[in-house]
Image (cartoon, rainbow, N blue to C red; front, side):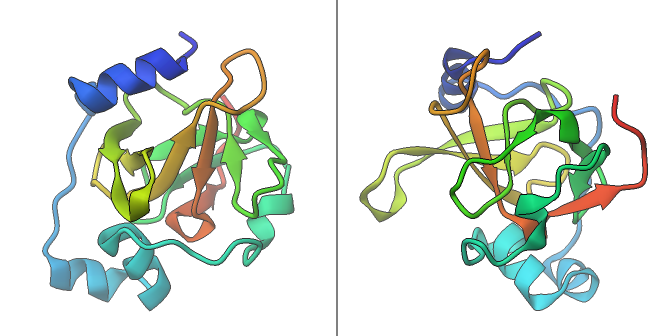
Length: 152
């Protein structure tokens, strides 16, 4: 199924799909596992500087997983150059891979994306992506890791 902006808004406002599994760790466990920047972005809802990662310009086949729990999130076939300075995708690998939350911080109205397995902050999704979905998942590169697995 192809997710649309209306699907994203419905999940953000009403209910996210249940994840396949849940990973829960203490704050100390996350800090021990992650680099300071990964911890800041994924656990404290931070944002990395735009254009700070080579991941933006990598378009090789493969899969992208959550840096915290390893859950597969995106297929490189859905990656595109958005010009924003962050890796961008049009669709998650599965409908329930991502959780959505309304984010009205900093005077903006956005939809935050989190790993649905471990609640890691990934970035935001916007309705200005390419067809056919029109979605742009604007992800923090430090929240992702390239998996050695093949594209699905």
